[in-house]
Amino acid sequence: MRGGVFQRNKTWTYYFDGPPRDDGKRRQISKGGFRTKKEAQDALRRAIGEVETTGRVPDRRITVGEFLDRWFESESPSMSPATRSFDELAIRVHLKPLFGGVRLSSLSTEAIQRAWNDYGASPASIRKFHGTLRRALGRAEDWGMISRSPATGVRLPHHVPPEPIQMNEETIGKVLEAVRSKAIWVPIALIATTGIRRGEALGLRWSDVDLDRQRISISQTYGKHGFGTPKTQRSRRQIRIGDLTTKVLSAEYERQLGEARFLSTDGGPWNPHNLVCPTAEGRPRDPDTFSRMFKDAISQAGLPPITVHELRHAHASMLLRDGVDLKVISERLGHSSVAITGDVYAHVVGDMQDSAAAASDEWLRSAL
Image (cartoon, rainbow, N blue to C red):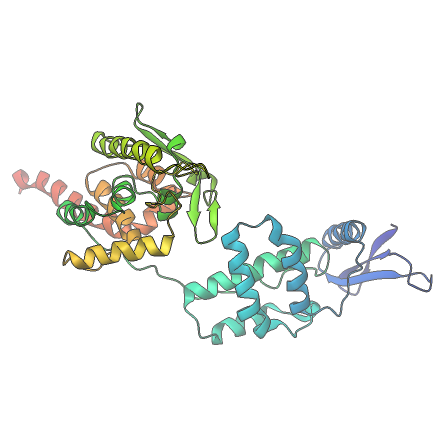
């Protein structure tokens, strides 16, 4: 396809010959408003590529709602089940009511900013909805439908995560005692002693466990939408386990061997997914049911409310207080960076700074 760019007043415009119209006449496609010649040339290449790939001609009259539907249809096959479900909800319930009737070419950063400023949702939710919009509009820019994503430059409400609940060894011990005789004993023990996420515990397979080398490998998760892969590359990791955790897993493995011999039928094996933490029927555990079982066990034991995720926080907090290096803790948790770990556990680091200040202050005592 032939095309080029030219300057009009202070901005640049691209043009190219698209597929002929239905009546055979020439169709020229153009778009302006680019700040530099390079921006216009880059957008021209993307627009031609989109037409050649899809056969669709960019329509300047397309609305944000129509574009979001097209984007979701194009991108959703490569999304994880959880992301696909969230994006579908965000588009249908939040983004379309806010922006759906606006022409894509007319949507501005200012309009998005005003919408989020007035939107009655929590800062955390707004940041997630905007994340979907930002990814979609980024593709519109890639496809040459807009010169610049208006989602760039929007100032989102600041989300301050709540401080993780502080637990000590005594509290963790009571929690583990409360679930010791329950069906959720093994996954809770794993989360408390390794800091893995709920979905990582429920998706753990025996093929991911090396009892001799005392390591577990996180390579699969299980959530509301079924099996998946860890959320980031750093979430794929190996974690060392201690002697007692190894003992718990060894006992569970032997127990499951007996269950498999007793419960396997001609219709198929018990625990066909080879899970470390299946239900009594050998199926994957529903995450919400698992959390409710934990909540009930804690309540029955007379302990204050604690969530499964707070066990993960407790694991990290106690390791920090025991002087374990922040990088090691970050690796165990599967955070994408040490900085994230430091931000989440800033309150613990602050307590340690106080202790360090008090200890070093003692050096002055003999001189004063």
